[in-house]
Length: 407
Image (cartoon, helix red, strand yellow):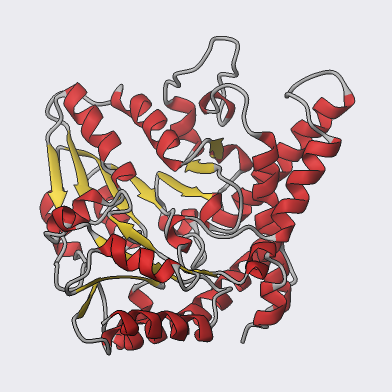
């Protein structure tokens, strides 16, 4: 079990007394993150590749962070890790490079369960290149899609399959490994959006064998910075849209302009927090082992939070949870639970909970295809409650009772 008092002491924002259940939109920042960012700005703040001390040290900070992220994702080498402003920007950037490899008639497969950042970039290049788009539908009853549904959309003309690791709207964990295998059998590349999954469980890009994977550090207790993994030979072979003096080798050719080096330092800090957690769990051999130990421990605890959220909210009259509610299937979801409440607009529910210092999201969370498929887009979407490992059962119970009081 987690020592929640010790864990919560690592997050300065939690001392405010607010209950942060807005985590799918962005988690609170660990002290390790703040320390790394402050140290960078005070001691090593400089642009890169200079001949002077602070510039050399700044480059070393970025190199160390890149190596840490490579271990976090189990990339084969640090050069497979690209930093950027956010996942959306990185995906749009890479999509432009991938578009050059496509011709009219090549097919792109997307799912309706994804965040629009893993849909719109592919729709845009499909329009530019004359590529048909094939959609994988999800079951509105439990908000899952099946491997069979994916397989039906993949043909010998499929060149790219874009899937999410976990839904930011309803919490579903998708069968990513099986999807990658099926796509590769058809000769297609696979782009995985792991933004929602990264705070909740270990990721192994080599085991998944995905071609590209993206995530965002501000979803796992770090700063607002995006991360893109790509197999080195693919990153090396793609044409990057960049300024001419910039490097021609990955990862630098995809890192446009001057990066937010202090944020990259903060990413390293967030991963050091996970390492610290892993040491509490007994993972003390390698950094990768400590990271996996931490995330495996968090995953077990978050099942308890998921169960409490689903049981509590399900007991409220007029409340409907969208997504997996079968308590025997908690392995198939992260602790992100979205609901609608009869007679209440989602924004009004969120505003009412705010009066109790309970912070939750409402709307479509940029998962436009989800709320459209569920018929909720013109009704204000859903209320989204997203737990993280620093949340407590007492906080979940307070949320449930506050929602019950609305009824």
